[in-house]
Length: 434
Image (cartoon, rainbow, N blue to C red):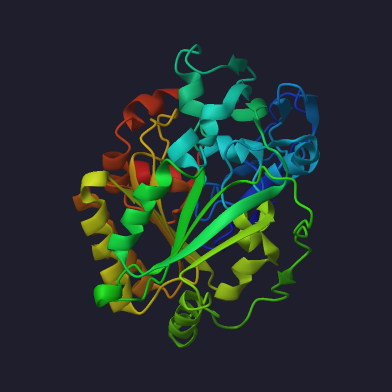
């Protein structure tokens, strides 16, 4: 029986069937038409949706298979979340080598989107730390994949949006950490020039770096914000910062978006000036640093019944400063924007996947309330800036990218197409291949 489905952005809403998976050794379940592997549904657009088809819901594949606390090698099923890994390994002195901005994604989803984190400039993407995985195809065949030695199957599957088959398990190389704390420094900066200077200064000195920006600031203040950089704390602390509690929750969906012209500008101004001193150093638990929005349960409800569209792009180094300035000017002129606008520079390490998003340059990510035609027209104008700069849009965050933009930004789609399982599909794939 078809049922309504949606991604984390709550747009689009589609009809699809669902089959729950619980046994990694079982055969591929029977389904009519096309299907798509699905993890915890934390992608923002339609890369995790299969309108009119079937979702192979893999969250039930949630078992740990093996962990060696001496080497940090972990093998687990693809439905295990990053939160569950952290709960197991952090007390033993290990942590994820790469993590996105939420810990509630599955291992299979992290592989399918080749996610990145605040240390991309040092260690690359999630896929760089996958040692091996098993891929189950719709014809029942199974492949054990390792980097560089699987005839291109590993490179197609990492960042492959779940289209090459169902990942049943994966083996990861974790990283040693001295404990659950970070030494952080937060620097208030006044414009884009200062952001790029801070980013260059921080690249060799700090493992993690990211910036929040006021997306509505204009003129000389365009791109102002807070630059946060951090390393794992190595000192034994006499007074340990507390681990975060359950935090807040959005208990219901408001009738209109809480992110609007009336709330956005005063919030951004208050957030920019929240720190009296230009610089602030502190020791804190790592969870709020890596996962600020995980502290607000069901935060996607704040955008109201129509949901929101996230827009994340990356611009190459030669075009980054001018291109980011043009994007922010267009956003400020529209009066639309985001409470959480994130700016970061990627490193130059080539991503392992044929369709991986991260590449050398600067990435900007924002959420926009779904206001219908007006926001779609705004995003179309942003697309033109990204296209002219030779940039790319992140498929995991996308719900409306034109096919021409996708094919230009991901030229290896022609190679990738040969690895797509003929019975797997998604809303995004059909849209960008039209």
